[in-house]
Image (cartoon, rainbow, N blue to C red; front, side, top):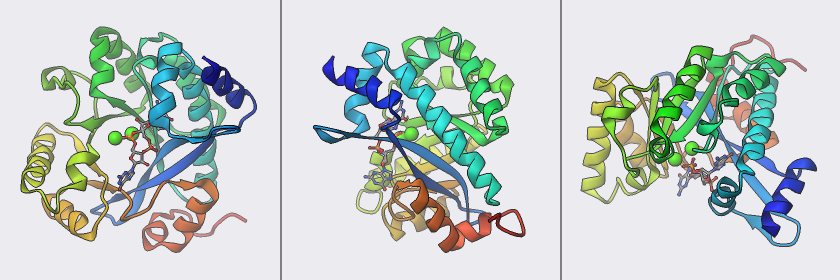
Length: 266
Ligand code: C2E
Ligand code: CA
Ligand code: CA
């Protein structure tokens, strides 16, 4: 409870930070997306990983404030990038709790409007498990978000209690293969088969596929050969603070290919 009090305070005082991890489009060899990842450096306890504080925030309802803060910051930064000539989508992680809030789509729309970001540049990442907690409400909220033009991605695919029959009914655009399969692809033949089969199945069902946890040139090559659409992982870039992300984009060939404007705004 004390930690949650501190988290509320950190949100109020703007002490949380967002890191950004690029996603590369294999076909175009450019950055087409960035995932926003939350960082909390606690004044007394130091760095607390999101895996530790997000589940508590979900149980106590503080997650609604967290998601609101992340959406606001993520869209602010994506609009800054677009002013610099980078036309990139931003992926934000949302939780099961958000999918129970009828007001959630209104909140998303307000943030998009505030920063004048086109809805198709926002991707919401949801886990299968989150959706299965309350499938009917999730369906309702995700359908409304889809009507707004927001894109939907299924996170950690392959680890949850998935029901493809259910996912198929949702307005899903993209599937993210869980990093546990991708990280071991080089050494584990079974994982490689799982990834390859998932890519094919998702394509046949009309989804685009992101592989996360790409840590080696070997897995990057294999994923490209399998026809995977997007790559994300330490091999390409670690999650970076915003200023480092901008330098990375300015310096990397993938960033260069991403620039849409002729000149960069000063
Ligand atoms: P996730 O959504 O699956 O995010 C991907 C995680 O994989 C991130 O961990 C990222 O740093 C890590 N990662 C990226 N590339 C690699 C790689 O090549 N190898 C390995 N080993 N790891 C890689 P992170 O930032 O610690 O986040 C952990 C989880 O916390 C996220 O998993 C997500 O579920 C949750 N999370 C993070 N930020 C938010 C947020 O803003 N809202 C919500 N609701 N959850 C968040
Ligand atoms: Ca994610
Ligand atoms: Ca994931």
